Length: 209
Image (spheres, rainbow, N blue to C red):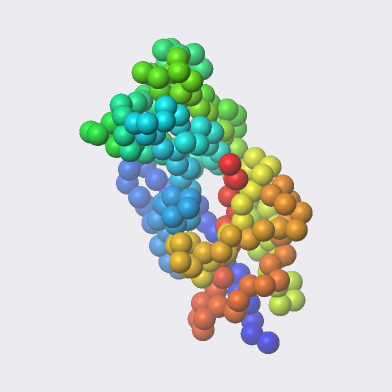
């Protein structure tokens, strides 16, 4: 029987926009976007357009020290922290237009909900919120020929990934679905393929939103 190895996901640090690579079982880790590549630190992404006056999605869920990013594809908008239209809270305020096509911010605040709005279109309902949760602590252990995943923290609704790459690139990543749904705190991966010689299977649990 081939011996299964486990990978422990470590968090990376980012200062401003400078990425500091942190080893993940001896390999570098870069920040990436859900739905494209998934790694650590994690980035929750919302998009604004010129045709739909909404943040898509309007609700982002991130762990402490992870990132939210707003991407522009059309129109003239802002992402501005605050619970009342026109009254900024001062946490962040960035234009989203053809000159400033994205804005990314680390959320180191205590767990809680932080509202935001688009200054020109708040009165039309263009608002959103970033929900900050505690970090998700994932432990992966061998269970016979399977991998047992157990975790704590996060917002209570989760998405599970397995990859043969530490960068969790789209071509190497599988979304796993637990028998008890997205609110479980444990998952038994009985169908993990044997990794290539010298390789391992990597696992990541993220907040689902």
